[in-house]
Image 1 (cartoon, rainbow, N blue to C red):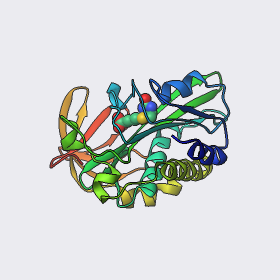
Image 2: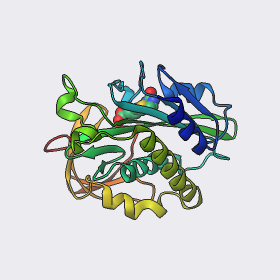
Image 3: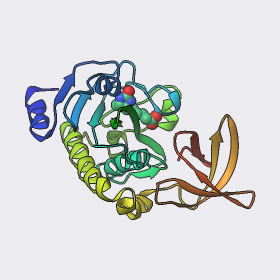
Image 4: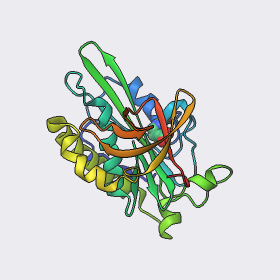
Length: 251
Ligand code: BTN
């Protein structure tokens, strides 16, 4: 990134700002520098060992941006797990026309444009949370398996995007939501999240412990968990342990 772009970003960052020409994983860096300021930002456009949800990897692809916000809330709140939904909402606000596939895949059309991985380390009475997001911004194409599942803001809109602006807007929007979230947890953003969530009222395939089950989603509870019905029984689906996909197409 150019110096003036980095300066523009640095001016908005409330904690420390770490920029890498290339790095293994911005989440790993954030956890390594856990003594950095609250709300520090770790940023790169070239990630060589990106981590995804469910132990998967997150592929590096030209035109993408990879960043992690380090959060150091006081105490360990039970809201931590639904914080990942808050970051999904921030991304959806920043990526025009996007929707959210629960818990936090960001979708454009019916392909994934961004993914979020929050990793938490608890030390004593406090938690350190690395909220990482990869956004496909100006990627001109995807190869192999990804071609069917992934898109970029550029591919969707036909217009080259200002990556610096996307970084600043995600960071600022996320911290706004985070402040609300600290006060009132998921409930404050639940309505907006539900409006953007394509998983609601759909039949989904849930992968739990290697087994696939078909369920119908009825809603989201105050903790951000899915309320689903399977075989006439209501079940609560918690993130972390499950992978969800629609019956038709990716989303
Ligand atoms: C997913 O599986 O959908 C989540 C992908 C999260 C990728 C981001 S890129 C920045 C940060 N650093 C990582 O190693 N992973 C996250």
